[in-house]
Amino acid sequence: MTSHSLQPIDDADAVDWIRVQRYTQGVIGPSQPMLGPLADGGTLVAGTPPGCWGPMITPAFEGGHEVTQPVAIAGAEVGDAVALKIRRMTVTSSATSSGVMQFVEGRYHGDPFVAKFCGQCGTEHPASHVEGIGNDAIRCSHCGAEVSAFRFSHGYVIVLDQENQISLTVNQAVADRLAGKASEMSALPELAAQHSILSLARADMPGVASRMRPFLGNIGTMPARDLPDSHNCADFGQYLVGAPHRFALTSDELQQAKTDGHMDTNSVREGCILISPVKVPGAGVYLGDMHAQQGNGEIAGHATDVSGETELTVEVIKGLTIDGPILLQNVEDLPPLARPLSAAERKKARELGARWGQLEIEESGPVTFLGSGVDLNAATKNGLQRAADVTGLPYDEVLNRATITGSIDISRLPGTVRVTFLCPLAVLDRMGIGKLVREKYQLD
Image (cartoon, rainbow, N blue to C red; front, side, top):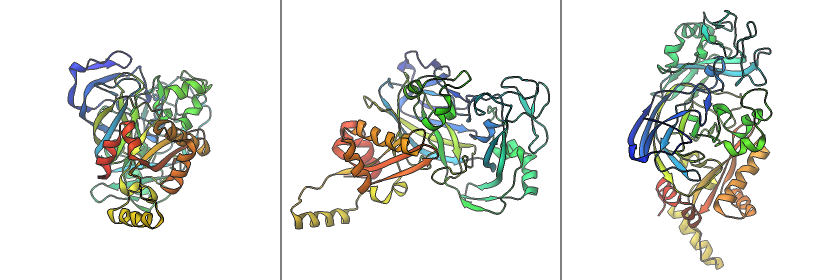
């Protein structure tokens, strides 16, 4: 079953379960045919190829990720929201590679993620193939020249133990062996079109052990116009404004179209609930860019991109008009001040109030608003304003609540943050997410 995203969705054909096994080559938006529709309450299962480095070194791609074909959700109309409840997330790669990037001049128009060409024969978005390993491995299929628009300035290869959630960077000899079977070690899905970054075999930092903590860096709903998938956000998206390629747009057009699916927020992981805006009929739920781990900020610009499988269920929230994502994080991921008070803490708060004559104590629950902008200051203001707009609370009250019952946390440099605070349950009920919050945090 397929439908195009700007046509009405026939809910009569809705199914309760769907598996996605096809991917876009860097573009997400209305030109992409949608699978489904998936019934409200239905289950979506998807295997995803790595984001970032694999697509970056594959010149045919017009975006920095390889996300799933979008899925229409029955009953989702423009102006609604869709809650994505992540039930399961599993890394399937045995190894990956990442690091700090450098651009190769003379191989792209304005943006090397979006508009690549062969520097020797001039072919736009050329077909390419892998020959050998190392920096020169990616070759133009038209003229044979080395063609990647990206290099590592410092990189590493890392092996992964999904069962024990541990990982380890390796030396050059191991990296070279892994590069010889790069697609197998990356566990690239059958229909994925990217080259494996393991082919470059860059191993500058061997012997570093780290815990795994898988999450999805790009997940949400389809933007209202075609965008490079890695630019469905304000910080990467700013490079589309006035760009010298077919995705050029104005700041206003970007703001109206994007859904901020590319968040690189490390708490978008198994157990969380992500609430995304609906900007096209049927929503168009998509996902990709799984990471094995990442600290706040994605400081190196890229983290450990892996293949993986995710299972989630969907729930349409009628009439919840939002501009960007709302996240219900796992308790352990919440800032300490935003975690719900225990029964013992609430008892002590009542006793404190009784001593001072403050008998009413607010019933509240945690909520996180994602903000994005050209830099962290703009992203913070955006997240706070989104919180005020959606909750109806005065902006300055949101500032106070985020200060004493929450936090501002960096998701990605240069411009994605999460604004978290304890919000009155009455407000959450009015928004239509009170039930989700109560269930997620086991509130009475």
